[in-house]
Every structure is written in C-alpha cells, then in structure tokens.
Image (cartoon, rainbow, N blue to C red; front, side, top):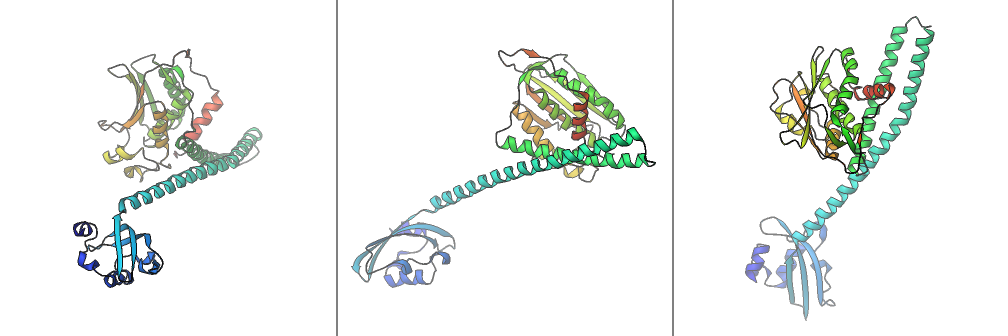
Length: 371
C-alpha cells in the first residue's frame, strides 16, 4: 500500500520497486541505524524463506522509526517480499519502562545508602558528645584551668556542631523510612492545644536566652483530636527553629491556634516578624534539598530537608502545611490538621518528658542557629 508506506516512512513505492534499490538503501545505511547493521547483511537469501527482523529506519524527514519486518524469499534471486509494521510506540514504551525500573532501583539504592550513612554518623557522634560532656563536667567541678571560659566555649562549639550533624543524620534516616513506607506514628486522642502549649512554654527560657520572644495564643483551651504528640513536637520545633533563624535579636515569634469555620480542622500558625520569603520560594520551599534563594545570603544554615520532613509528618496526620501568602509582616507557616478521634481509644494526657530529654531535643533542633 503506497499510501501506507509513504505515511510511515515518507519513501515512495518507486524507491522500493526492485531488489537492487533495497540493497542499496540497506548497504549504504541510509535507512538503518549504523549501530544495528543492515537487513541485507543478516539475510541468507539462499536458505531462509522468511526472516523476522526489527530495525530502526531513517525516514525521509530525517526522523527514525522502529519497524518490524517480515521478509519472504520466493526462490527467486530477484524477488523478495517485504512487509513491515510500525512498532515505534512499543519500543518507546519498553524503553520508558526500563528507564522507570532503573530509576526506581536507583532511588532504592540511594535511600539505603543515606540510611546506612546516617546510622554510621550516629555512633561516633554519640561517643564525641559523651566525651565532651564528661570533659565539661570535669572542668566545671574541678575548675583547675585558668582559661576556663575559653575551654568551655571550644567544647560548647564541638557539642553544638555534633548536634547539628546528628540532626542531619536523624532527618536523613527518617526521610528514608518515610520514602520506604517504614515510618510509623503512634496515634492517640490528645488535647493538641496542650501539646503545642507545652512545647512553647518549654522553649520560652531558651528563646529568652537567645534574645527572641515567643508568644502563644489560642482561641480554644481544649481540642481533642487524633495525633502523635512526639511527631507534633518535632513538626513545631522544626518550624520554630526555621522562624528563629530569620528573626533578629529582640524580634518576636508567634504561635497561634484556632479552629476553622466548619469546626473540622485545627489550624496552627507559626509566624515571625523577620524577613519575608519571596512568593516564588513559598511555592517550592517544601521540596527536598530546597532553600529560599532570598535567604541564602543570610546567616541561616541548613540542608533544605527539614521542611520536607515537616510536610511528610503533617501528611501522615492527613493534614497539610503551607506558607500564608497573604501574611504581610514577616513569614507565617500554617498547619491544618483534621479534628477526628480514634474509636475505642481513651483521651490521653500529654506525656511528660524529663527536662534533660527536652533540653537535648532543643539543642539538636536548634543546632544550626549561630548567634
């Protein structure tokens, strides 16, 4: 069918009218990709009656198409019967399938690598931190060193930067678990107002020591909903750390809680009166390894993975987190969580944690803030 032939390859029937012309096209590699050889070179004219062959053919418009050939020999040296069908879409599908398979395999290898690497970080870090703490305690108790302040400052720097590496390791481990669907949260019915308020109160003295003010306000005293207090604490601490980075000395950080008009969501707002984030950055700031371009020149440090982790943890609570684009003074992050309860589950009081445990969490979460 000349129309069919011309529709697929653009070649006219006249160019296929005799064997010599076909041989010429294949021998000169005008029609077949040079890496695949030619039909003529792979065809035993004397013995083969029918050959099934796939080749990448150069069309008249300069593009390549994959064709599946059926070539029949009718015992006539001058007569070969060629039929072909276009399998370009099939080949592209197979190629894309292999690329996707390779990409999934590579992603799995990458996640396992980061997970193993992060675990390898934690063992020496724990030894370093334990040793530093031991030395600091010895210096404080014995007070034998004339340069006590200098030693204490150096050891504090070692400790802070060790916490910073530990924070990165923890984030990488948890992101790997989330990507692999191995991260679990322990849901229960808790008063989320109390959960958030306890975090803010515990941080008040820390913020004061770092010359920032933190202010908590809520429209409701009790909102019982299904959540994991440990993960809520991590979400809030991460966002407060982010707010603190970009709040100048003497600046204010606000934590507000309210219920939406339909009373089916609790909204937690964390804002500061520091520098605003560009509109474009607000849309992409939750992407992995992304930092706001407008903030890179400031003193802020970080890997760009913290907000991605926040988004993932909020999503595990069936909620969403976003930057309020209408907020005028500084930057405001909003967390919306559904108000729901787990059946046959008693309401729980917020679990109390030791002061040491809380202080260590603060030190780890705020370790990338340098004053």
